[in-house]
Length: 102
Image (cartoon, rainbow, N blue to C red; front, side, top):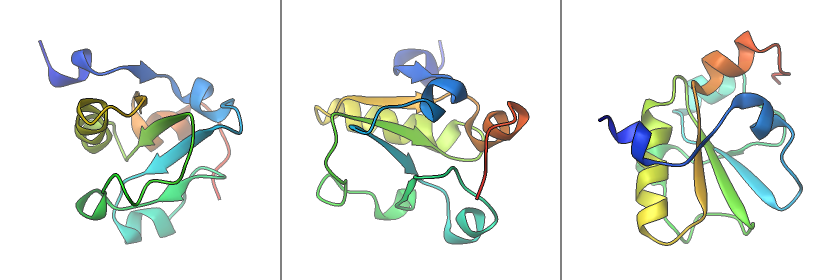
C-alpha cells in the first residue's frame, strides 16, 4: 500500500470547485510556481511549509506537480490535525483536465 492511499485525496475538479473556506496550497518550488499555477492558490514550497505559515481555512487542498510532494505534505498536515487533502495527479492532472492556469 502506498502512502498516497493513506491520505485523503480530491481530484483536480473538486479542488478547482472548492469553496472560499478551502485553501489550495501549492508546495512546488518557485520556478515551478512561476511556470504556471492554479488560480487562487497559495504558494509555500514544501521545504518552507510550517503549520504557522498556513493561511486560515476550513480545509487545505495540497497540490504539486504530480502528487508526490503534495502527498507527503498532506500526510504531515493530517498528522498535525489539519483537515488536508492531496490533489490527485497534481498540476499535471489539473492541466490535463483543462482547468485554468495562471
